[in-house]
Picture (cartoon, one colour):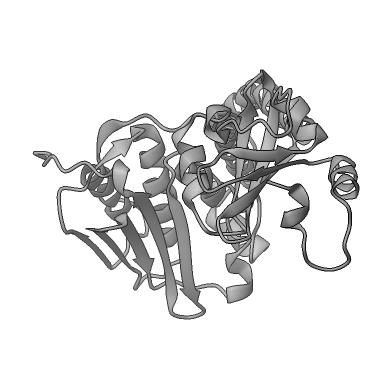
Length: 352
């Protein structure tokens, strides 16, 4: 098949000119047919995949033999992308994009993202190490502050400043704890385990803690349409449920109502956590899962939030190939919907 036949639009260029232009690109370009065989690859793609012949006719799936890549090949979303490890170097990473071309062919674009990934890892490692280093001295400081709080010989005019110090040290410990959890989630690229997790049991345990809190919600409803057994990492699932429900409790008033609903359909399982709290404007929804993003900084600190809870939720869900949808209206409340893929749903009934 002639490469020039793929570029019939616009001015007529020779096949050599087209090859020269594509070979000048920094990205790897691969044309594949309907059977996923390589029709042609440019210089970078040939080097990265060790192809001796740009018209190799090899099946592209042989270079990325994963179920994620198979799903990526079969999808039709032009905006979809996939990160993949080089088949010849475990320290080289590619970002892949698939573009429909012609009636049955596709263009696979490979971009070397090794450098930004390494830089991100250095940044994450530095922040994680700094958090670890801060933890020990902060524990010592908190210990001394606790002793001062209990010391009856301390003058009365020092009591409130010391209590304020105690509150701030506890807040810093919470921030460091959440940071370490977040860094661990970010650094682990592997998928979550597939142990059977009793999601309903986790929700009921969190509900019990909420109802025993200083300011419990007026109403807390739980509705599971089935056993709620899913395949995943129990610690991460616990973190997802706890952070979302605690966030709902934090932004509800004395008449707060929280409802947790679990249901399944052909797409998978869905956990809806809804509250009647203060709600959020739509402009905040895209950024609310960013680290330390706060809508009202003063209110968030006053209520004890670290600004990391929803970021932890996002990464914990990603490890389960799950998604998070957020709906909210100011003065009405918010709804967080965690959707798990169908292969994460376990149909065995758990006796709780």
